[in-house]
Image (tube, rainbow, N blue to C red):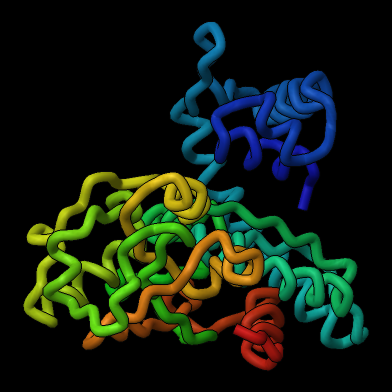
Length: 297
């Protein structure tokens, strides 16, 4: 694929020359030069420039649509040729929800890179809803999400198990009673993830089905990441709900503790999401690699 189109996609995805340069590991003047050359070749402006803000022109929207398709086709070409030569290259744009991107998948990506060093892997993160949206917009090739709900135009494949647990700071007074129940949680200050988070969606659905909807609990704060919850709890006389995968280090360091609650068992699956149709190219390599990887979760 013509490198100028790769630069164009990076600028269009970020709507920023600076962010595109950072993503591509080239200078901003180099990004500007590539875009100018592409515009001269096509004879049309691709971006509206208003101060520090840029938007796609009508021509830019058309080029963006076709460049995205070309990018996918080029990766499929690389995959087919790599299969014949037993060499593998191309790119793979991954998106993962916060819990997966921080605590689950980095080790696997490192192992994948060792196995396929010529495949250029990139990873962005956000909540599950945001990753599904970026997948629908063709800004990533493959999403890894932790929510229950599904988009009708996407396919989902499980790749790992997870459990959401009740945690608190080590000195928190709550949890000293080993016979705590779901009903007891209604009176304890609770911190949870933000709206749009797959973790929050799973918690809400579970509690509703258990007869203790979240709006009846004493939720005092929504925080935008699991890290924020973990950093908040040691200084807070209350509890949080997070993935067990996120707290291995804190349990070892004795800064957080898991509080057992009778009748509470929030199990879920981490899943791949991708456009409907067969998995092809580097997406298939990665999905097969992850599903066969021995993750100690």
